[in-house]
Image (cartoon, rainbow, N blue to C red; front, side):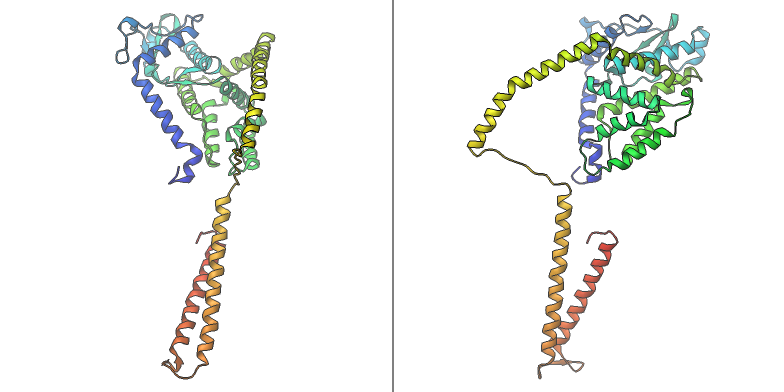
Length: 381
């Protein structure tokens, strides 16, 4: 980020830290087993989703012992047909399971490729290898829900609101232009049948649009989009007529309805009230500490002006050119005076020092003209 400032919007440090944490978790087999148990608990009421049971008496950070899964690998489509399994039903159940992990649970399998999925009798689905999982906070799930609904329903304003929130207070972003391009991107899908929308590709296109504006997705969203694209590819592999949007829309609407049920609204109101009371209780102490520090002269105020460095650089360049112009003027005036003095060494019939002064003034003048010309073309000098 220091050496290559144009990479800063992509948060490379944060990405590297997230990758390091992910690799550390993948190497911790006990952590993988804990993830598996949490996912299994979330599907206790859905017997068609299977997660291998962990045998903790034989499991450690370096040893993972779980039930053996004897099923059809996700890539063996011919065997699926031989076993008489319903590929359409498997595609639907698999997508619904991962959508539930993402939208409802906030803990999802981040690498649901065919090698990590097995199909069992009675059209059950087993997920293995929970070393790489994604986690979404409640707030992020709310944002994701708004984004997905906006994409599926082709609601440009909803999509723009979420992405502009992710852009934050980055003063280098032209928010009006970004909002216009987001609306144009979503509007191109108006009139497109729901079944023809490729949700994974739409998310990838949104990512590319942000990248054009030197914005990066939150790191937790990168894993999610990867999982979406992998999942949609698996679904189409099982069922050529599979469409993620038709699977996602009913669940998304159900989650939205659940958000506005009286019980859910009462729970959110209670949490908001608790936070408000906590802030109110802390406020007198904070005000007292602020006044005490002010009396001691310990209050510090920081002011950050956007693009201040760029303005400073421009002032420095202007000052350098002004100084050079003064030097040129001095050389011309001094050389003119020397030319009027009789005697001394000459060159081409002219006083040497006067000739050298004029030559120096010409060289400096040409340099100054070149610097101004380059600056007018948008290049730093």
